[in-house]
Length: 260
Image 1 (cartoon, helix red, strand yellow):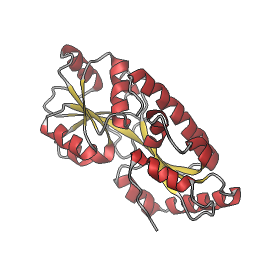
Image 2 (tube, rainbow, N blue to C red):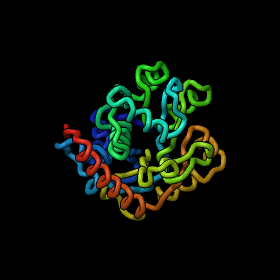
Image 3 (cartoon, rainbow, N blue to C red):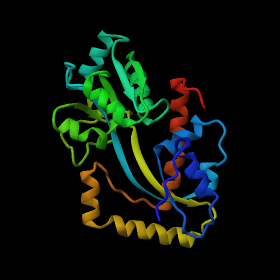
């Protein structure tokens, strides 16, 4: 059974799973925002590193840097030059203050020395709608949310934020290729369970996910949605989640985002 537990940026779902019986019947799909939340929310009932056990990270996808095609830019360098020539006049959309698209935009501004007006939205849908409409000119966004608009020319992708080009979109250069080495922002998903789940059960569940995602049909279907499947070991997932928490803690602080 799949049960959605919205609220608190994913914190309510995390609490429910951390407090559930460690019998292998309750799992949670967490994502990048859970690593951000550790810093963004001052008071949390659950400690991500203490109260859950990672089973596997299963997917990591780069963000894209997207502009309205009315802008006379086709590369990151051209956009940076445009933003510097128009300080404070370019609107940068995000799907919400403190979330991944906002942090990706703040990191971009810091690394390029550009000045833009942050326009937060309540979700990616409204942000993309206004990006297409020209109310905002630029936004970092997950590829699946903008892919169809880029395909029909309603939006223009000028770069991907992962360490390498996307296998299903190889024509889009990375940020590093365009003069921004070290700029890496990815959205990822991982499966976690209550912390006291026995190691044998962790391995059993991991192996089941690995087998399911090894299916060519599943991998092809996920790729069409812009997802890069890579099922990791539980050990790698644990170290990766820890490193992501540390990375975003530094970024939230540098960006001057006040914890909630």
